[in-house]
Length: 518
Image (cartoon, rainbow, N blue to C red):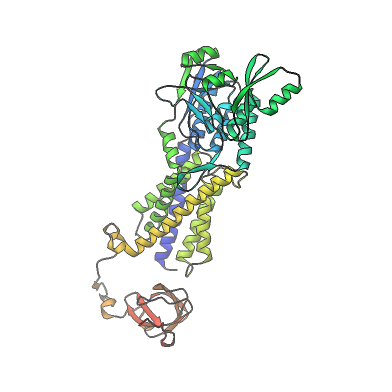
């Protein structure tokens, strides 16, 4: 194997390994310090506020999990989740509900606040999170509901999810309502367009019930007075704070933190947690556009690095790009050894195809596919989708990765063609010409290299497609050769027509010379 090819091959593998160590280190050092408990507060019955504001995404899951652990480590009696969101990803919302439902030893409270910093809403995924709490409190002028799952289509538009996704979220909302004593009919009407909800007076108490619930009460002999339809079929239910309190969903109206503490019987607020700068960075890094940009940047920089001498800025940028992809996934708990091993294996196959195997075929294509698979898995926390929204998430991740890889290949092709004309890529091109060497005149100037002089006029066979450069076998040895600008298919008989320094120029034998268009 050529020494230069060896150096490039092993440098590429070293680059990948260094990138993985960097990604792992960035994930480890970015972990929260919640494992170190602070001093337990002197007063019992204190509260801790965790603010859930903005889009519900994987970064929000990490934030809620981290701050919940911190609160529990300090013996907090009340964990208040201040919710202010239009919604977000269903899978992230379900993960947050799992975190909240796993809390033991503290009372969980959802508080939909109305302040200068908030919008006073808890819609979609926010409603799902609210129902996972033991109690729901709302400020005047706020609303909750509209929790039907949707999918994002082309152009960023949304459409209603399929029946399987609706059924899954509907059953989860009903389960959360049953577990925490919230009205099940309201939960169903917030998710399913087909659910009809009636306002009724049951034993002097106003409630919102489905027709099935009303019929069951009437069969049991309970006095039920139907007042009117709250949510007709074909509409999703959203409730204001007043309606939510009247129907028993909201435990109380609390406009301020002081009023909320008084209603709960809590003594003081120990801390208020807001997403910090690191959480914002993780949220940005895990967004689809940034992930695609990092993939493009990483692949292009790897190409530039292996085509330049030494280790420089291109290699560093490639490491940082893939550290951003895998490091952010590692912090979110979505990247393990499988994803890293797949990525390394894909890079290895691609490098072998480029440097060791003539032409481009199964090995190179397999390498690209494995790299793509590792990147897709780094963006999700499941291996095989189990429901509709996981299938949708898989499709979104595959689209991001495929777009990134295709754009990177296009960029590499443009750089290869246009690089010599672009000033920034001057270091990739040798502009100077050597006219003298230590041993005498440059072989190029004489037209024949002493090393390859005996090849002139000899025949052989192309062992790879010459585009116009490639590999050819001459006298039982394989050489790197090139043509005068035309392509020669692998297996074509060729003859050496000129030797210039270390350049071996070949052409097809006269009988096989391609016919050029007139």
